[in-house]
Length: 339
Image 1 (cartoon, rainbow, N blue to C red):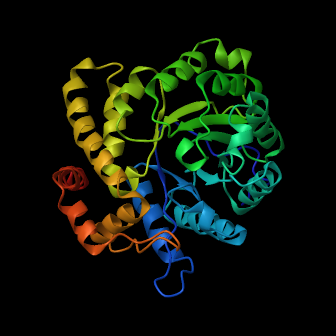
Image 2: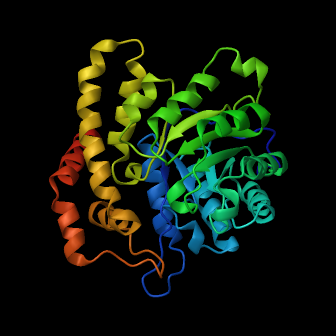
Image 3: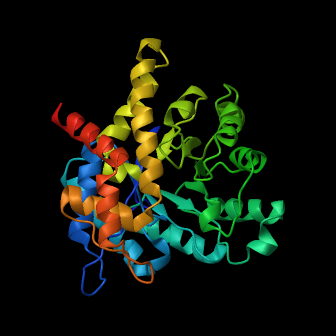
């Protein structure tokens, strides 16, 4: 069922969301939807949400029809596994505002509940310092999108464009169809400032959302500050490490949530945060190819990125697997799976 046929999107809740890789067949580089469906169900069973066609999903390498195919396959797999209420967030960022809006409509028709939009960095020199142009992009996209939209702030993938907390807070107030932000800038101070605005008790009444079950949530883009995020009223993370060790990352988030009423859990939360933060920093250096190599090692699928993104060298992949930070994470994940 497409979201044009649904009265409201599936609820967007605080938590951990995995930006799902796009898997490709070895010889043809065609989409490997079978691997995608396995991975979607695996992460869902661990308690993680999912994002399709984002940076980890190599959105820049996908045709419009492939984005649609990913969403339909993921929705089919989730529903078949009993996760009918689990929302799908789909990457809709494109070179122009016009195409971003078109991708948002495609995503809604294919079964996505939310879009996440990054601004193109191709003309960053003309846009980065233009507050009006930056705000206009997410304003127009959210106003014309059939589904709620999240802001994706990732300077590394947008030519260095880095939204400040004032712009994001203003967008949250002015755009009722915006449902949150992902901060892959890694700026905990920025996250804190935005959280101060949207967690204020008056925010919901003064700036109501278009959909009551699509609140404005603030997600980090890495796992190395999930604990600090919780302490300033943030809402979790959209993080590539949740592909490799979803149970471990979800457990950390759950501990952080319980800390609000049970401070005695702080030492255990700090322990898990340390293991996960070290692994995140180590694995992130190997980028998409490294994550896929670890998935291949752990779960039997992963493959290579789509060219021109190079695969990881065999020696480097083995070194990544053998690294003590990776092995600490793998042990933690296995322990939690067996509980």
